[in-house]
Image 1 (spheres, rainbow, N blue to C red):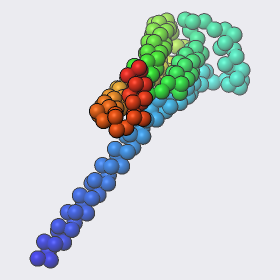
Image 2: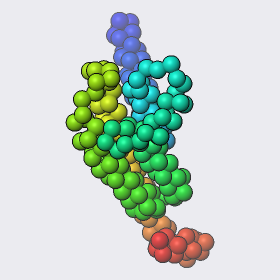
Image 3: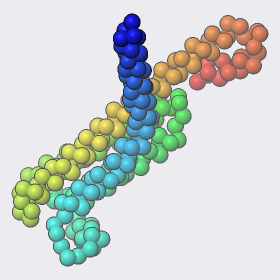
Length: 208
């Protein structure tokens, strides 16, 4: 009898532990999804810049001097300095639109549209540039330099696609919220005579 009770108690503890771990994982995923636009903007700003810095040929000059030289001698067919700039501009536009949009605009408004347009334009630009840059052998740093260039282009492509996916996920999430809110408002409207203050809320929701 005692052995059966101890086994049952251990089973309950294991079940409580599994539930706790599942709850923590769910909360972590929700937090990541909620913070995904900000985290993606940070990665889009820092990662291409770090890869460009690593791909630059070693020199006794400072990083600032080398960047200034790249700007002065810019050539679309060979220079890589514009890849991080495209990522920074893309991220700045997307985060500004995201911060200015509310629920309805996040669901089916400028956030998803502008994010998609910016990402597709940057994808086209980076793809066109890759066709020029990668067709020229990298004689400065050999295979290592070529690998860094490939990583730079791949990171820009993947981050652009990531922006579109995150914007779509947020749009779907906000649509579900608005749907639930609409259902709640319609349920309240059934007894609006007893709750006159909800009539104004219902009217505003219908106008949107």
